[in-house]
Length: 435
Ligand code: LLP
Picture 1 (cartoon, rainbow, N blue to C red):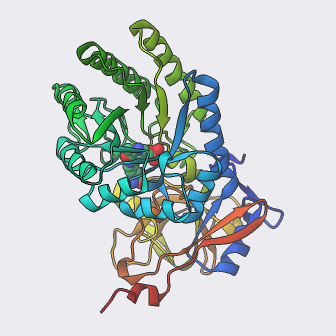
Picture 2: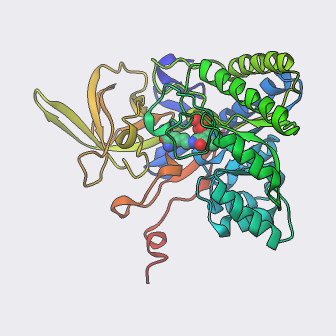
């Protein structure tokens, strides 16, 4: 791999153009227009298979890879996840509905969210979602009422906040005590919630869930979370006699956005977490729980790029040079929100040295509409195709129609072939619900 290109699916061809999954990005831009999301199917499948294999190889009691669909959600992606034999985490009626549209096996779905609506809970029960991950006692009571009304029993996990502070951006940190998610472990609330769940009609407590954050490189917080949860499962056994046998550790594995990021191979995390869990389970005389993980970003981020056309290049001597592109914060709000780092390449000059420094600005009426500041790039001119790399996660799924801009299409590439999997929005689409 050319390390400046950060993702395995990217290369430079004889014409000096950036390629993804064997397709020339300049051709893709010409054929489908810009802005354009492009995703490499093989990268997605490889990531899912790697995770699956890492569980099969390292973990004696088996488990499931449940792709976190919030990272990127559309029908073809669910088909791919389904074909790879994985499950999925959904967080809304919209994600659930999309999965159902392609016939995703409902029993492999985990339904999350800290404020699911009554309609969403009903929908989950109607479809037969595998596990509803209950976030709080209000939801537990609501779910109990609904499931009894429907004559069903809801299989649930409880979301526990294990009190682990992962070193990542504060907006994507979720395991620490000060979190809107889940039930606090340290102050005894979690134990009370377990007791409550065990005596609540219409629900059956199957296991526990935690998720400590996102874009985490260090294995230590994952190990710590796994051990903390197993300790808690032991406490539950000792105090109630109930042995819970399923544990969902969430997602959060970091990916490579720039040359400075050095994530471990996914199998490596699993090996370490699994090793720690086996050891702890033995010491506590507990069964090794069935393990669910929910990677989102690390399944799709590196598979994706976004292509734009360069408009004006504006040099302000002594200050900076802006390169304006035909997309921006509506298709990628992550710099505006988190100052997220990205690598960009001028796709039609990918073989040339990136020896200029630019600020990439979007087309919205907003100064904060930036994709990256002071970033190295090949010399930019009007009409160039700019590729922003590793945009497969939390770009399309967080996109908006700000400034009434239609969302770009998503093109899936595989072994040199390209196909549209999500059509670009039209102006008509933007007006569809206006009365
Ligand atoms: N499971 C649960 C319960 C989660 O809340 C999340 C992410 C995941 C799994 C997947 O985590 P991942 O493997 O993707 O790190 N919008 C932010 C990221 C928010 C993550 C929210 N929860 C961003 O663009 O960085």
